[in-house]
Image 1 (cartoon, chains in turn blue, orange):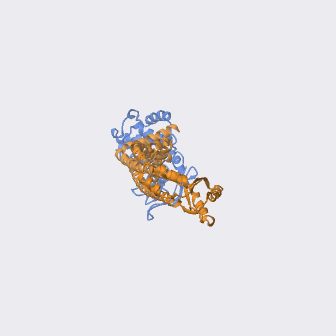
Image 2 (image 1 turned 180 degrees about the vertical axis):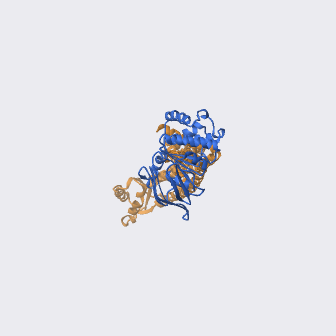
Image 3 (image 1 turned 60 degrees about the vertical axis):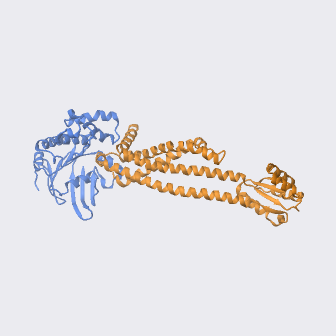
Length: 227
Length: 302
């Protein structure tokens, strides 16, 4: 379970990005966070991976306030959370296999595990035939699926997707969303930050609307993109 | 663990190769530092050899007035031998001094003729005193200058040698201090250059680093390759230092030996090779790793 208690984030001591946000997300939920640019969606996700620390409040994951985590424990926290971004964040000089393997290598996994797990996860996202392709030889949707594969490699309990369809056309966006829904059906909590109306309406699950750093609406079931 | 270490070393080596020109420049500056440090060790070796050979030659010659009898001199000798700081006392009578002098100048006709012209023996009886430690001489001189010997002793010649030793020590001390200062300054430049090289590598790899952070790469996995990279600069610089230093020492050694017979520069650095190589390598790697460490702390937030 993820809980945010009275979270505020102020950049450079003057720009208030989040203002007293309270939020609770249960295990296995699929939550879409919508809102215009600057609403605070990405900041909210970055707080959950402790890329950012709030100026005030608590970010609680599985009963632990991650704001108080010692720096050494942060990598372990991040292994529990898979992250997906609009710009894919892939390494252009590495193949699909190597991009996913890289995420395992830097976490100290052994060669055998890597050889075993990477093809499996690439299979899950439908990229078996692209295993030796470089990102620049792949279409946008494939790149995002590769990024999802990398996010899945540590079998995370939570997936944070920050505008994952921002660089994709509708068909590819739909594929990516279907994949995220499939992952969610297998028990993984998915938190999707987007301002793509069609995508949110297809999902039809919980929708949290944000504006100017505040939650302005929380539709817990069959949510629609409403600001 | 083994694979993890292998990966860290392999990434460090890749970083080193990727910026080959920059890496060579950094290694070059570090090599200069290590060469200067090695030069300091040469200065240290030579000056300590000179000082210890001078110290070996140092003794106190106490010249007695002609009125002093052999018995009186014998009493002084006895008292000197009882001093704890005295290692050896040798008595040279007037006759022996004259014989030694004649032998030394056997080929010099003018001196021989001049000696024959003289009525008596112009040389004085003396005691040569060797101390156990060079630091013992001042107290022996003080003992001899005491009132009870004043009527017998004509001259004590320790001070001249003392001046030479002090001068050698002061020159070598000055060389050491300036050399140390120059080494420190160059070391600081090397640290700055290495620091900037690692900083540039970190900048070039910012995307990889960002991904490593996002996927939960441990601090050790993210940072260690840069430490390895810094260490490699130091290790390679040490290797280059040996490649330059040993042939140079081999070339200079005969010249040193012609000035200071029995002193072999190359012999010293070969017989102490393990210690020398270990020390220079350690300093090189330490400089590289420390520079990387500072760069990582400053620019690599994980």
